[in-house]
Image (cartoon, rainbow, N blue to C red):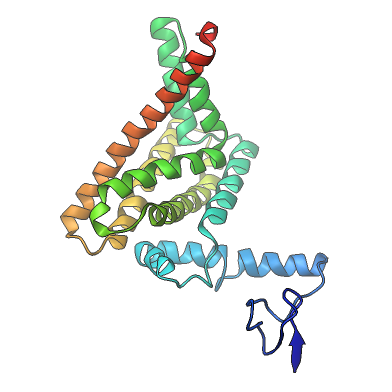
Length: 260
């Protein structure tokens, strides 16, 4: 059966256009087609978000390496993946009145600063508090920082910066999935001490997932070197994050000195 592509008007036979790659089955956009897209793009276990999440928890480093090597058809795009998941996580934490580890940490910093010096963190506190309250955007902001850090630390592996962006986007998505799984348990626990323990578990789990993924992804290096360079990556990321925040504060001070 001959089909005329609705995208480029090329005449072809089969399920996909030989000229532009568009599928021959282009249905009218309606309620049914939207449900179909949701089912196959998000909830399908063999393709989409669930498939990508499943593979990231089975063999994270190898999965990301294969994605970079071109095996991408079954996977959700990394930036859309992390943005959708982090947005869902942020909405659920708001609805359930739960806070992220970052949010609790920042409140503690502000409290300590206020009680010890009768001042708060000022613009610095506002910036970090904004990041705590906007998990999705904060994640997207932090990814380039940790990607540059891993790029510097693992430069001998010959992966470019943009490949590190993909790597760390998937790692951030993997971490967010883990947090989403833990969130229902935290919701039903009312004890503050237990919730504090859960926050620590989430923090440590995020680090462990990063170590696991990096350990598989950089398998061309010796095991001890992979572990040490991952530790150094976290240190470099912390330094770069502080420098970026201080730079923002400095620029703001120069532009509006009366606010300090």
